[in-house]
Length: 185
Image (tube, rainbow, N blue to C red; front, top):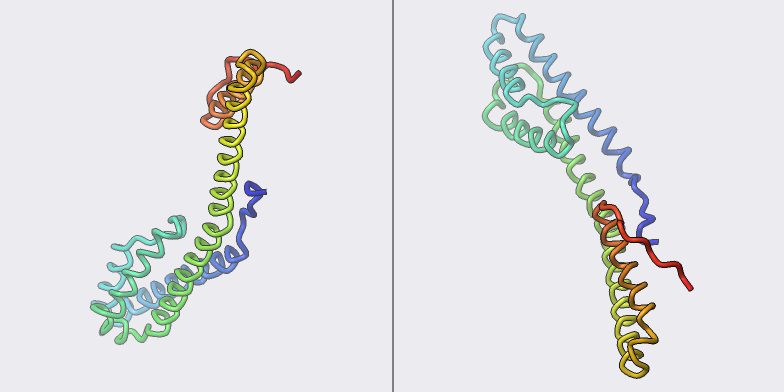
């Protein structure tokens, strides 16, 4: 049951939509700046702003966390050092929309990570602890039987358990099992 974790979060669709929105707003912001290149009084500002976008190099193909970090830094520049340029070209609405989309995307990404951690990882760790406890209880039980009844009666069982353990350890790391597992009697 612990391994049957739902892989896709319902938050993913919202993250995908916000990612598209964020890139659409960035494209609109760039287009607005490019449009200002044709206005003599705004050419310098437009050139500086377009160079800023080029310097950040944000691409749709980027990993979402990397792009979010770059967007966060870009927003800080657009609302700080480059705010007069944005205002002179009247692009504040795009910057505000981009800031809102980026902040919401960060919130949803963190929420999705929390869901993954609380559902899958925690359940899997708990199942592993339970399996380890059951294994150690079995080993103690078999050791007690060996002490009481002698090792000869339990040699086959001990060999079988050791072979199973070796098989699963090799399988977990992707190795090949060279030793055949004895048939159950």
